[in-house]
Length: 593
Image (cartoon, rainbow, N blue to C red; front, top):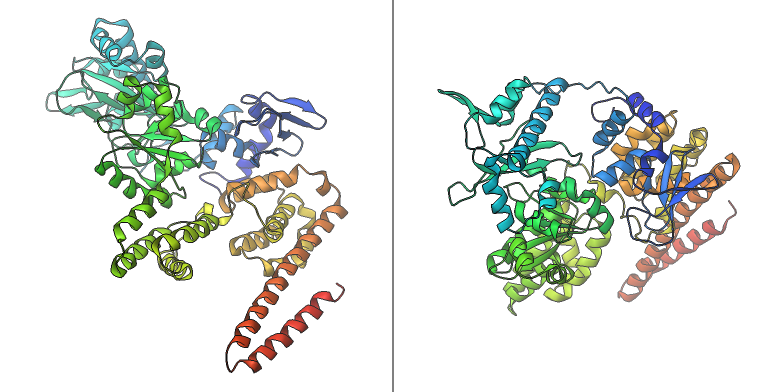
């Protein structure tokens, strides 16, 4: 079971979906033999390296490494979770997905009514802005702030009239009053029901699928509160929602970056200036959930901060949130007296582009600050090293951890191994009983991997794609030589099953990272695995590569042991034992297999 529907339903959706049709809505594809090719939508290229195989149901880019099934494409393109992608494709192809509702939560029909109520409210507010006398003042206000009509329409801005029951009547006509009350569009008191938003410029907040989930409302004068927002509801959680994500998602994927700002007008004015990858929080502090949502579209997230001391302190607080989401994050420091909205209006897009290009890694700024504050005293450097270790223990990507530890140690004047050990100790204490994050399962696609690393995911891919070979792959016993324990478990789990790879779609989404699923797609595109004998030989080669890696590391460890023993005054005996063990290991490695 994946999400709220079974594997049989997931397989039905995949069988019904036409991967060429789904991807073709975003990429101009041309047939090339058995495949379809086009320019990759996930990175900039001039020569097509993006390939789709309709027969096997996979896509793969030989340029950036992106790949997977039709579900993976929709997830990456639209920033959806796996269950959301399944449901989106199911709606498109008319597949009914009965949903088991959470205890105490709304039914499917109630949720549908809520979405309809929000859509009715959005259309109502837009109608008032453009087609009534009540819209004259907000239209003038938008013009003074430099917001063009096309931009206003793109974000579906509207206006809530000051009369107390305008939206109420519109919802009552459509039997949506109850839904409006649950969403906070309406309030009921001793005098009866009335509109929540009155005399305010309205900002519809949409999810990645374009559905209105909430609203923000701003006064046109100096009254307080300046902004009010929809309350939390079954459709809306501030901590998991980003304003502008629907308008920005395609640009984020295309540019492989997201700009994170603070306010609605920051998003709107940057979008109008050409920075269409801009999003903002919804009146709450930045959260891990918001960054994970962005991380599904791009790992390159750039946050805007004030250029004063308060803004720089905010960037240090944001660092841990970024790391908790599996992102390094970069920061832009806006000159004092400006925010992104006023900066791009008073300067121009080129000036803001220079700020974006100068964005620095938040971790680099953090290390520089710790180095500066530590001074030259022993106590200061020790305190700084402890703070750095506490931050490093949050870093999940092993390659990023390695590079950062190498960089931080000489800056702080402490031993690299000590810094690594302190970071790992903290990480082990903090991660006890905690599920490993997807980013920790495998390095990101495109990162250089050893032959052993490729062999591990290669065996899993073969087991998934060739059910007829699972018993023979299991008999190789290669999982004993895996370094990625989670991947070894995944291999044994797959080998114990008899489903087709299509039926394992939900399992793969739950147990493998996007990068691992992309590797499986790359394997599926190879003709080498089409023939049983060649696929079995490849599995054997992978097993040998893992065995060779284990032996090489054992020999290296023995060499190190012998060297250390030779350097000690009374280590002659230990050195001889290590040398003998090394000779024995080499003989075993040279024996024919």
